[in-house]
Length: 297
Image (cartoon, rainbow, N blue to C red):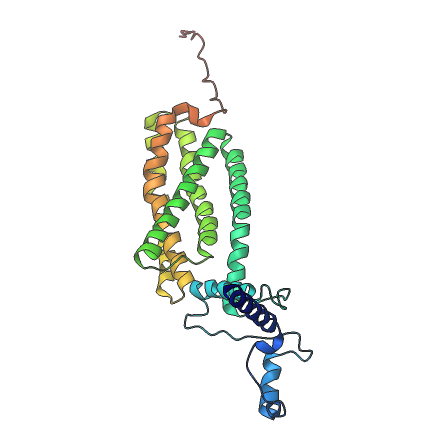
């Protein structure tokens, strides 16, 4: 009796699975009279292609279409549809999404893939320029490291303020824009200081480094503050990406101006001494020969 009951249950489940795999078991019942309705025909053209091989599904959300939440939801919707089509007759169908949220999601994915290439090209280019101007491998690497440190500090501060305090993730465009601007401006400001240190302290003397910092400090500080104030002005807008970009770049400029260039660069230069200019050698000082005094009347 138990064996017969189990066999009956197995047959029922098998037949149910076979019927569920047919197209008649999906969707809802539509009477034939509805197909002749002009309103249904007009609406169907918006969601089903004339050949019947393409269907469109409209998904509406409560989030802003430009927000990162909407972009993440677009990716999640596509994954849910792809998972629901598995082991069905539509498992080989192509699922694509469109709209502003999907466009932002695609841009974010492309930016994440290309960001490493942008970083590599920018750092190599800046390093070659610094190497050509300073003619010192150590100084070029040192300045490049300070620029990267300023960028990392600025992005870290942005993550702390927006993601941890305000609970708003950084927009996908912020790291790339901040990297390009902070590397360009930071390398420029630090190059002015280092070039002056090379003139004032070719032997790595701390007095010469202090003179170089004092001679260039006022101009570079004023330029950094003005540029940072211009970036902070972007925070007056209502677009999240501009607000975050203005804050991160402005904070990075202030960090580079008052911390990196003012304290870090002179301190490390004083610690390295003449090794900072390796492999460049100092020009030998002119030797003074014997002096002959001629008395004339």
